[in-house]
Amino acid sequence: GHAPQFFNAYDTQQIFELPWTRVMELVELFDKAANAGTSLPDDARDNVAAQLPVDALLSVCVLLSKVISKKQKIRFLLGIFDGNDNRLFDRGEFTRMMKAFYHGTAAMFGIQDTNAERVETLAWNLFR
Image (tube, rainbow, N blue to C red):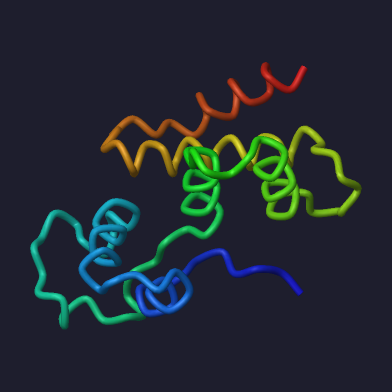
């Protein structure tokens, strides 16, 4: 099977064992569509409405971690993005990883410019 592309707020809370307030902070960072600039009460944002992208959330958390070794980071990222399990990134897998990392970083730091085409071009040039 394949890993899910999105976590809802309830799944995020259960998987990461985070307090609900922290989960709502992640929803505000990663799921702009569910929030759309509005300040909804927690009960109005039901646990299915929020869509947190798994690859962006996990890749940015792992890559920015100071307690995970570089070797373990690479293994983890291969596990997420190496679709054919050959223990190497092909250009498409590397590009998907870079897009996810950029999206996650942009969400975490409040960067509005998430031009996917620009990130894809960067990834292709880095892969060479």
